[in-house]
Length: 138
Image 1 (cartoon, rainbow, N blue to C red):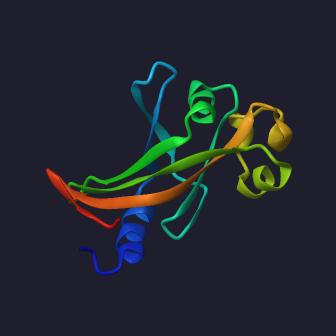
Image 2 (image 1 turned 30 degrees about the vertical axis):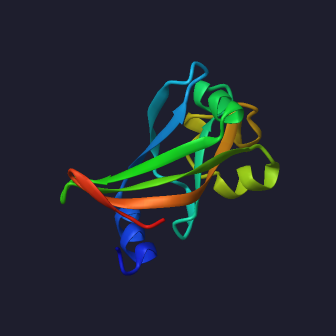
Image 3 (image 1 turned 60 degrees about the vertical axis):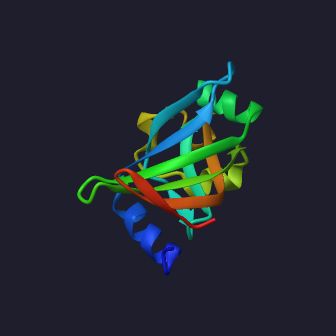
């Protein structure tokens, strides 16, 4: 058991430049997508990512919000695996809070671009994995 999951997991998460988001597609098959680092996180329970509203991933998450996120620490061959539910956020306040300078390269109409949304993942369980196994945190 990890003594302080928030500190241990948080340190790994903060060093990662990308995350892997996993969800189920419309046919019930698992899909993994590389995502840019979360724009915001609240401890190890809430993560906010940017995405295209028109993407298959957003459509799939609207149908089945169960998701997982994986952050890998390549240096020590370990990672943080977190499972929870995803919510597609399209309200102006959230979109403005998560928006960063330079996002225009992905969303040409700016923060009000209808193809810009935020994926919020709320975690219910997690594990620290080491190569071939893991430590559950519940």
